[in-house]
Image 1 (cartoon, rainbow, N blue to C red):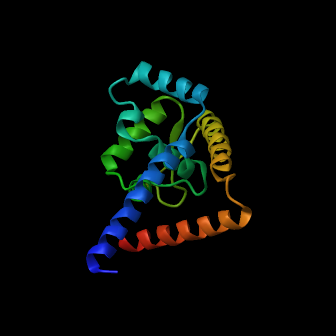
Image 2 (image 1 turned 60 degrees about the horizontal axis):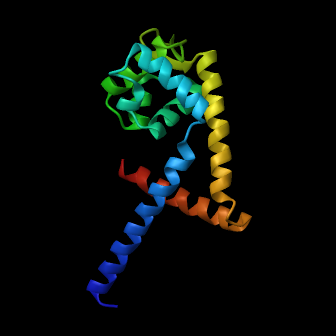
Amino acid sequence: MSADGQEKASTERVNRLLQHLEEIVPRLTMMPPEVRSHLMNQLDAVHPRFSPRLIAEPPTMHRMASMLYGDPKPTMGELSKALSLPMSTVSRIVNILEEQGFAKRLPDAEDGRVVRVGLTDNGQQIYEAMLSHAVHNAERVLDCLTAEEQIILLTLLGKVASNLKKDT
């Protein structure tokens, strides 16, 4: 194959990848309508201009919530780095989530200057509902593949993700 043909084939593969991701990712990160409606109504009532949907897309909000749900609780700097967002944006999102009772700032047990962030009980309930729905969506997306094909897909996606981490 000529260099021009190889470049054209490579461009076609990239375009197909992007098209597939555009179709798949929104389906994986959709919140249940009742959770989305409840959350957005509460946020819009207090902060219509600065609601998280204007600051961060649903996949970013989902990743942030999953970090806040886990242990140890992340610092603001860790959130900023993991989400590839400026500290000011992370701080604004956390402020809104805190004002709405979904998140809380916590003192670090070892260093009083460090502030960690975690979910409140209400925030945990909403995250668990989002997670349950995301798992259901992922199962529906993957059910067209055999168990072996799912393992291959996940292995290849892991390889791509590892490669991306090298660049950061």
